[in-house]
Image (cartoon, rainbow, N blue to C red; front, top):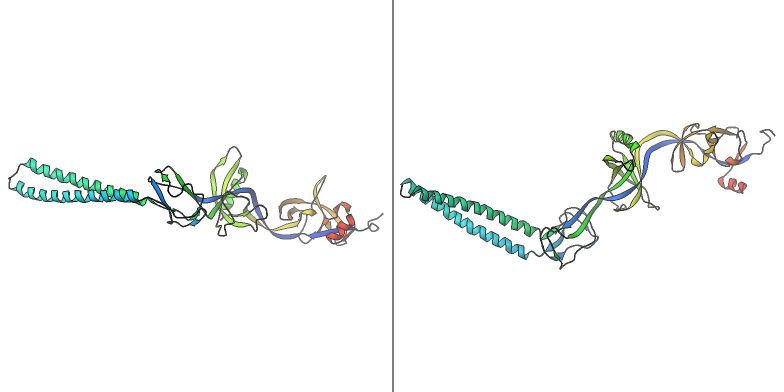
Length: 348
């Protein structure tokens, strides 16, 4: 039976189109806090106030804890009193030096006695300096009674409550995570390192994070960090993307799907992915000619984007390709372009 006598095969078609194609590296990433601070006390004492709630957002400088300041206030008062006493002694010694200077000029006292007065003044000056340092140290320790947040961030679990006794630099009181901005850490094969560095030299590289399980639209960021060494055990290198995270969709500890865009190929030819078939001689598509016959054409397929695949060679933009019904086709078959529903009904 000739091609003209053959019965038309119902098929659905798609049109090859041109569009820009992002060259991407995909990986699984982990969300990490931009910075993490562990709050510990620098003085020992009893916690008299907890000034925040667990899970609360805090600003840099906000009061977190208060440790009983009374012992440190007393120590500061003692240090200030000692300083005042020694300052008075030093001032009296200065007056003595002036009096003895007049006496030594008139040769009324031994030189040794004058030298002793000078030495006493020097000792008192050193004592006053030490007292001033002690006052400053006591003032600093009093300041340590008021623990304030060093960063903008979000508080975690409270490790100790009001009334507990804490030791100096021993007890972890709280962990604060900065989550705006935030990092996403991921690893890529070391073979992509040269390409990544080459494209990064030309400008910032875009990073997108997608929450698993239908977490909404991709979240945009930029590549911020390339590790200084390759992991020898896995053959990968660690990268970090930085995200503004103003809406806080990213949270420390989450796993996300990451896409790193290295470049954009302009006017790449795309066809629907279901149009591409695989045979003994490689991959091919059926192209619909103007006389509504099918031409079997070998193609070189590239990466996929969504439901489309890049065709490196074999199809031109604007040509129609068969997307369903290929099983009933042979080269030269007549086709009858139908809706997808009609083709499925015919096949069943």
